[in-house]
Each structure stands twice: as structure tokens, then as C-alpha cells.
Length: 390
Image (cartoon, rainbow, N blue to C red):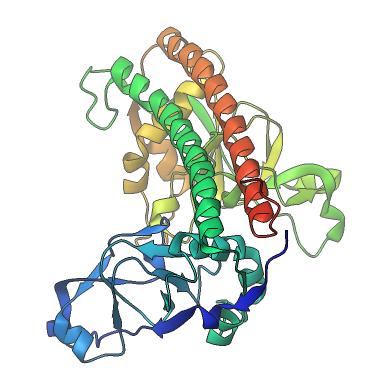
């Protein structure tokens, strides 16, 4: 089934935003949420990090957008779209799409349609460092326009599929968090150590190795023999490393730093303090760069899975040892000297057995997440080509 398409500008009025002067305190800390791209954490825009006053609206280019409208970023966060469930002001990097005639196009349908065009919007972004699109790009987006009742049916089908996807993601997250809850139940919070476990420095139970970057002046160091891990490969919900984008050759492997499966990799240099202490278990032999320290457990003294969850639960302790408040950095010597509570190796192994069982369930759930995401994407593509069986 084919439907005629119309330009987005025929369906909506596009309204921009602005920023009240930061030099005038009377414009800020009011009761009106003022959204920017950093508030696009979900498709429901119901609050903001910053709030302004009515005077701030009256004396700036910002706009107060009534609830129930579509809002899209035109600079940074390209491809995202949200519906504001509260009246909200917006800054200059956002545009509100206000439907002209609700008897012509359904809000939820239009939301899903723009969502389906995410990659198209991203491709049209321009800019050397920060990508942006012009208002004309939005105006010219082609929107297929079936009858209103069909639009509502499509929106309902996609909403159900999206909710299934979100439910699977939530279950995966809850299973991942369960390991930390079991750890706290067995050993207590390592920050306060309420069960009085013996405190030891990390260096007493693990060897700590700092990564490096083999000379870029020697192209023979780079090839396809061994993965070269960077900090971006560490932050994964499955607790294991994502696949590296760069590889080293056998010569590069000799010039670099390599650890075997069973080590714990930690981000120790990062652009943000929040990223210090991000960790993952190396489930294979890898090389790694200087932003990362590897903690290699001593045999029969420290269990890998126990160490991993301990460091995850004690992340605040790790971050408190950071020596750079602007970016984030913890030296090898600082990391080695950090004192943490350690139960006996046998008790660590008891926890490790439970953890491994939980991880099997997490991986099963992750497979379901992938399956529901593929299903949602397939439904999305069919829906706007008129191929969805309603």
C-alpha cells in the first residue's frame, strides 16, 4: 500500500527557543523548566536540569511550549525526538513541532515517523566538531500520510512493540543490579565496611599494569592480531568488553601492554570524573591503552568476579582518589594504595558462583533485548512503507 507524502512544514509550525541572559539572576531558578539537549534522556520530556522565571521568558528568545508537542534537537543529539508532557521552555538548540490540524495528522504517529527518520536526520548534520541541521532540513522531511485512523493504528502497534523493548531493557538492568545487591547482602557496603572485614591495599592481592600506545610512527605495530582496548570499550552493561575498533600486530603486541582473560580493566584517565572507575572483565586476551589500568588477581588470593563487583560497588572510593577535578585521573600508585575490605578467598568464590549464575541470566535477557530491538526496527520500517499488517 502506498500513501502520498507531504513535507513536514505542511503539517506543523516550527518554533525555536533561546537562552535568557545568565548575567541576570532574576531570569533563573524559577518554576518553569527550560530544556536543552542534555534533557533528552527519554522520549518523554517531563522536566529539565534548569529552570527559569517568567521574566526570563519575557526578556529572551526562548519559547514556552504547551504540553503534548514534539520537540527535536537541531544541534547535538541529532535524530532524537520527544513529546513534552509538561509546559516547557526550550533553548536555541531545540525546535518545537506544533501540529496545525490534528484531524490531518496524529501526534503519536508523527512522533514515530520522525523517530524512524533518525538516521536520515543524522546524515544531514553539518559541522566539523558539533553536528547541526538547518530548519529547512526539518521542513523538508517527507512524511507519509495515510488516513487518520490508520495513523492511530500504526502508532498503537509501534507503542506496544516499543514498550516490550523497554520492558526487556529494564529486566536486563535489574538483573545486572541484582549482583550488587547480593554482594551488599553478603559482605556489606565496602565504603563503611559494617561487617568488619580485613582492610588491604589492592596491590596486596592484584598486580596493576598500566596500558600504553605503541608508536604511531611505526605502522608495522598496527594490524589484526590482537584487540587494542580503549576506555570506550569498557562501559558495557554486560560487564564484559565490547569489541575493539583497532588492532595491534604481533610486533605491536610486544611493544604494548597485554593481559589474559580474567583481568579487570579500569578507566583511570577520562574526559570526565564520572568515567573514572568504569570497569569490565577481560574475557579474552587484549592489549589496552594508557587510559586504562589492568588489575590482575593473584592466584588463590583474589577472585576475578568478586574483585569486579567490589570495585563496582566501591566506585566512590576509587573516584575519591582522582587527582584531577576537571577531567579525571587516578595514578597507578594511587590505585595500588587504595584500601578495601577483603573477605577470605573461599568466601569470595562463594559469591563468584552466584555471580556467574546471574550473568547467564543477564546474557539470556540481553539476547531478548536484541531480539525486541530488531523487531521494533523492522516494524518501524514496514509501518511507514505501508507494509504493516494492521
